[in-house]
Image 1 (cartoon, rainbow, N blue to C red):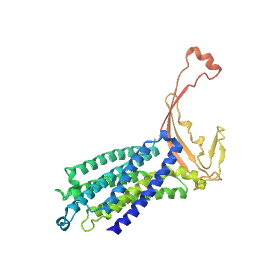
Image 2: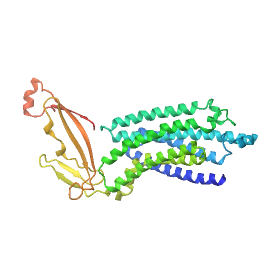
Image 3: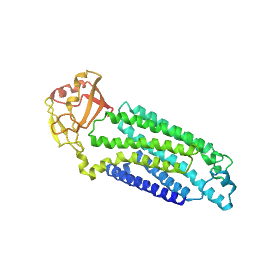
Image 4: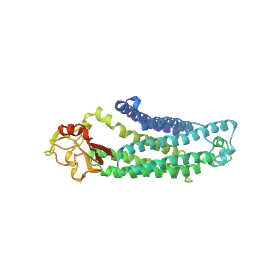
Length: 378
């Protein structure tokens, strides 16, 4: 048991160290971008999640290095002594802490990822699916909390030695409910993200990074399934479930933070800015004389020829336009190195008549703008 506890401690604290390093990079990037007073919702949720993640790491190691819990065989129950009962009560309390902290840490990561999805899909049809998954996530968290505090009553039975209800030791019903609510939510998040990834035109280097992140998402689902197997399947029930529990939580932290530190990594390693990109160049539109920028870094080419004015009509005029942000190659052709983001934007344009007394001034020049423009979907 001592060797297992030492191995478990090495693994968990290593995973924890990597997670904290990524979180530190995240907040460095976010504070540089927004300032400490203008952090976003997901930044606060990440802070909340890391508190529970830290508590979970401590609790798991206390369970592994302690004197056991109230989950016992008949032989262990018969061999109980006042000292072993005291140790098992303490261990059982730590088991309860691991379950509850795992719940809150994982759902905090879900909230962060959904916030990211919401910003990516702003103005896109996929946004409604993000809303549906967010509603499901809230309901599933409430369901898990209710299950945790109702499958074993009173709550103090969770650390009673021996317990009056076997569910207070095995957590079997809770694990079934938690798994049946948690895993479908993770699958739904991947189902939203994969079509977006498939539709984005990116250089292979950048697409490979996104594939790694989504691969981690698949790993989270696999880890969640294995956790339940080692908790519920007779003959496989063992402390191995804790390894997979913590791996699931750790990779969830990694996946949630990696997208937010990408701008900082590009700043620290300038070579990453040229992945699939080319030198900056300027092109002009022969019809309007407007210039379009293209190249590396944050510069983007906005092609005014994509704005189709022919579909406009007087009165309540509407025009469907495409905003293209391209990272072109030296030749200016659409090759594999291009980065293109397309968004549909609807313009509503209305005209107003100038008052009669102002008509003479209006003939001599622009007194005011007769067109009111509202933009949707930006």
